[in-house]
Structures are given as structure tokens and as C-alpha cells.
Length: 437
Image (tube, rainbow, N blue to C red; front, top):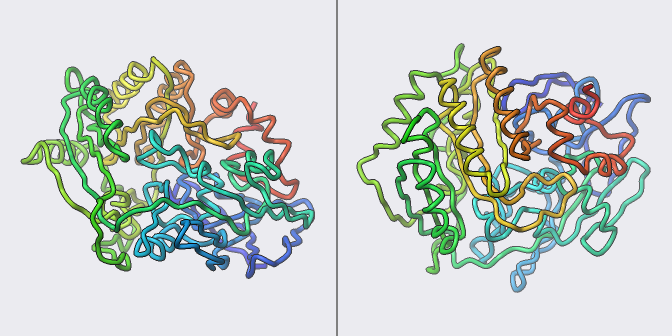
């Protein structure tokens, strides 16, 4: 066992951890120090503290990076939990298969994708990642190994999908892929003037496109509130060359002394980006450019400086979704805080399989905020109240400061889930949202 400092992707939470590792999927659950706890750790791409366990230990799974089998006729793949989504795509796309759900980065592990039940730009069509997991092995600290699926140990399947690594260690998983002709996509970009126009455009876009996502100018107000660019895309029906190895075009080699994301740069970027010369474009592009644009910038999280950043991602459901989203955007615009990356999507009616899965039918808004201290805390308090009023919730995988009352209100099954937590497992996030008075 060794000890080292780990940071979340948002770089706000830093803490020293004891470190254990699994060298093989056949290894036993490690014996941890008496009175301590451990948390499975993949590639550390969670933005907040759900991947950290300060004053405890982390159990690294990055050595579990082997493929077990792949049936290129059926698109069923079985691999260890430490395999990155990027590695799966590199193997399977040239053979005509694609992951049915991917988040905004391919640099997450299969175990992490299951533990956070990640979603993508096509939730309105296919649901979340857990909807396409056929089965997995769960290793408990008791040394028990359970095969979990919707039909075998279904209660443990439901607890582990979206369970934030707290039910034990996923050692391997079997996934169902979807067929594609190749690596290319047809992408159309449409500029819209405000939130109302976005909602109208989505009615058609969601019916004809598998993927839809909008960039929002988070500083716009009045009649321009919620203006932005809607992207809709489908996999190309034409074959294409094999997937190339991902190469970064640019990178952030150091952490600047101050965040380069501030009011001045944000105002300039949003104005120029929205007023790009062509308001409607169609293009043929590689899936990496559309689905994982930030993966082309190495260590992009360093742009926010030494204090890091928070991401605030919420979902507001039902008929009040548009009004609630408008209220959220008004509060953000008044504060003059936000980021270049303000993303708005629609979740569909698909039911996610996990007890703590985040998606529900409605609108989901995600923004990065430089860690600016008290002014940001005040804004978050205002946003929390609006989300609660709309019966919405925040995304644990992106969260680093959600108050416990909001978590417990947004996830009413949390006490049922708690029954499935491995007694050796814990996390900073779980302690924060369940022990807070």
C-alpha cells in the first residue's frame, strides 16, 4: 500500500489517500486498515468528490484494462472494468459497432460509466449507459463475487448502476453495442434566438436525429435569454476509414496563476461564438469531433487555475421544465458568472435502471463555474432553490458541493440504496450528502 494526493477533475477537492490496487480481475478484495474505508477508482474524471475518499483509501482499477471477448457478429463485448471507452471504440468502430451511450469524454472507464450511469446526447432515443449493460461481476469485501444483470441478482444490478462505486468493485462487464457504418457522422448546426425557439426546434430535431445538444450563451438576457446553437447528428450511413488513434491538437501544459475563464473572456467568447458567419451548417465529421470535443485539449481543466472549478448539472422534469430552465438561466445571467461550456439537452422517457440514476424526462442544463468563492456560493444557493422548486435534482458525478437536503429530496430511494453499500466502501460525496443535518 502507498499513499498519494488525488484531485477530482474539477481540481477543487484535493486530499491524500492510501492506495490499493487490483492487478487482475481475479484478485481478492484488499484487506484495508481497521476502521478505514475504500472506494473503487477508475480514471478520476468525476468533477467533484464522488470519486474521492479523504481520510480513507482508494482502490485503483486501471490495471483491469483487458478485453475478454468480442463477438463482431452480435456486437456483444466483454471487458474488464478499467478499460476506457476510447479503447472500446478504437477496437469496435472499424468492425462496425459503436457504444450506444457515451458521455462528453471517452476517457472514462467502463466501471466508472456504470457506477455513474452516464448519459449522452442521445438519451431521448436510447436512455443511459446502464440500459445497455447486459451483466457484470461485483466483488464485495466479504470476498463474494456476484454476477449481476436485470435477471440475475437484479436488486444488486439496480444498486450498482449509478451506485457511485459504493456497492463493491465491478471487475468486468458485458455490453451490447449498436451497429454503425463507420466513424463518421452527419452534423447540422442551427442558431436559435432564445429558449422558446430551442424548445420548438427540439420537437423536430429529436424526432429525426439520434443526437441533439445545444450550446447556450449563459450571459444572454431578456428576449435573447437562452440563445445558442443546436447541434443535431446521426451516424453516417456510408462506410469510412478505420478509427485513428486520438492525438491531441493542443494542450494546457501548466496551471495558470489565475483562471483564464472570467467575465471578460466569457463575454467575448460567447458573442463571437454565437455570431459565427454561417447560422446554419451541415458537415460530415468524425465522431470524436462531435461527441468528444474537449478530448482534443489535453488537461483542459487547468484553464480554471489553481482554485479549480465546479460543474453544476441539473435536470428539471415535466411541464415546468422550460419555465424552470428559464429561471435558472436568468439567475446565472444576473450573476455574470458561468463558462464557455453551457450545455442544454433534453432527456427522454426511458427509465434508467439504477436506484440513484440521474436522468429523468425533462431538460438538463450543465455549466462550469470558476471557483470564485462567496459570490458563487450565493448563486448556487439560488440555483438549488429553483431546482428543488421544480422537483429536479443534481448529477452526483458532476457535483462537489450539493447540500444534503437537495440530494435526499432529489433521490428519494437513497435510503433503500444505502442497504446495498459494501461495509468497507465510502466516499466524500456520500458522507457529505447523507450525514449533513
